[in-house]
View 1 (spheres, rainbow, N blue to C red):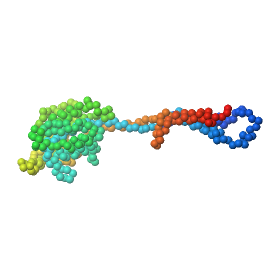
View 2 (cartoon, rainbow, N blue to C red):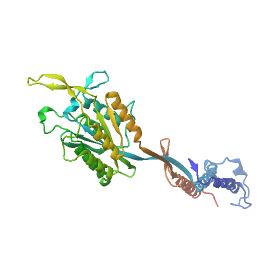
View 3 (cartoon, helix red, strand yellow):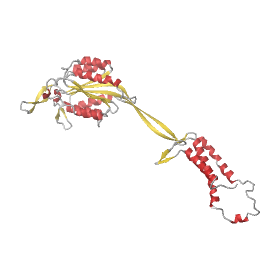
View 4 (cartoon, rainbow, N blue to C red):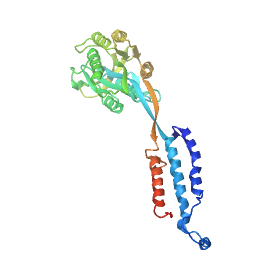
Length: 364
């Protein structure tokens, strides 16, 4: 608590005047008696003794009124955080080639590429011991194979996005050859459209302004499906000031690929790894991003760490005090709700006037 005008407390030096007026004696007769010896021999009654309450009530009332003039205030500190977040569109390849087992899990066992991508991207969004997470950023998900599909809109609900990512599966042979493939251009164009549509969304508040828009495109192949060429999609992204980071996932040469025979048995054969690095580098160059190559699980995590450092969210914290005037507003202190000080002072004055004219009345 604080006082807005503490110098007003100097008026408290006037309080002794109340007692001076009360104690001084006026040389006048109230009731004429030939002798008052019998009155002196009797003790004062309780009512007469209680009259000391009158100057006491007035003193307290005036003291509180002076305190009200000094304007006691109770401050409540509030903090508002304004963030300039980044809109991030994740673009993840789920074509059948992502079944290649050239990455490893934490136990060092071979695991397919998409499983590792899911794990690392989830850490990138939610945070872990190695990655800080993106709590202030809008993040969306586009997956693609033969066709591009928006799996999750740009959102701050990162738990929902992570759940959607975990449910994203690789295209299986039973889904048909039409579903399989690598439509890089279509996927990037769809991601750009979702990032561009942010300007029309009402849920992007002033407190969560969009600092920049980026896309992170991960694939293990070359564009062989779709209607839009990757270079054209990159030009569209550049026109809307959207930076694209591209990642080529896969080892060099050959990788083990699980294959199911006609009897339903699964065996592994060597499949050649081909990543169109030139196209991915071109996309990154045109949009002002960077190209990365992930040949194993550790390098993939390091790539997302580097992107995390390159694209930082600006957070501004503003603190301010909101004051409550104790003279005119009730306030709660340690669980007790106190009435306004001005109301207390007026109640004391009213009590004094009431007692002066009733129970503690004197003649004259």
